[in-house]
Amino acid sequence: VRGESDYSTGIAISEPKPGNFELNVTVTSDLQGIQIDAPKPLGKTVSERVRLQAVMHEKSDGLMYNIHYADWLKTAIYADKNSEISGQIMLGGQSANESLSGLQVAGVIKNLDIQPWLDWQDNLPETTGPSLLDKIDSLDIRLAKLQLKDQSLDNLLIKGKQTDSKWLLDLSSPQLKGVVSVPEDINNTAPLDVSLEYLKLNVNDEDENEQENNKQSADLWPPIKLAINSLKINNLDLG
Image 1 (spheres, rainbow, N blue to C red):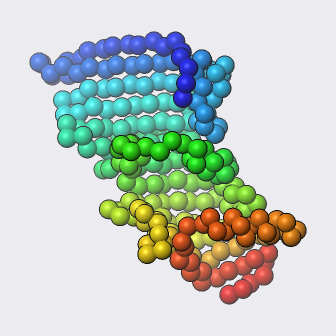
Image 2: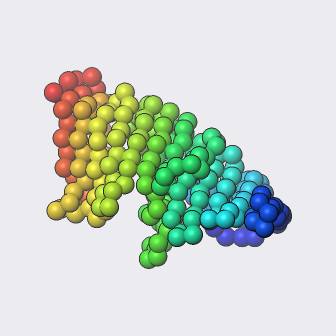
């Protein structure tokens, strides 16, 4: 993120109970003049106008943060006096739910090409301190279409929960169904554990050069433990 933009600020003080004052601070901007180097719809050019509204609501026992960005990302995040975080980060335009235990990322997304996001993540600088992403406890995301290279998944539902040492992801779509266990540190002792009830793939013919590229890229994959009960490739049932 770089650049600068005009913004407006509003401050309101209320007294819901005698002697109990609460502060609301609202910041709004069209972000023109700021560039966000990320895939759409999160990213934007310097000249684009994208509405941002951020509201901080001071309560007697903590702070509530409501953020609306481009009618695509909305948050309702509550931080109590002990810095415990709860609420929801909603993707796709729906309203976020503040009355949740823990912090959840949820949403309904029409179309997502995952490769640009993976490339973007690879180019992010390494961070050493804690971030909001470390506070996420669960996922509840529905994707109308997920594109990964030449594979497409329709109506993919992702439900996930983070434990102390790993993420457990439940995946369900017409093309695949199963559970993925993602350790905090993926290695040969603690591999990515993928257990699928079924997997249906459509594979196109590749020339020799493409096959060689795939062999080389396979060396870059993390350690994986894979189990598939039912596998179909191009409608060929392999059991």
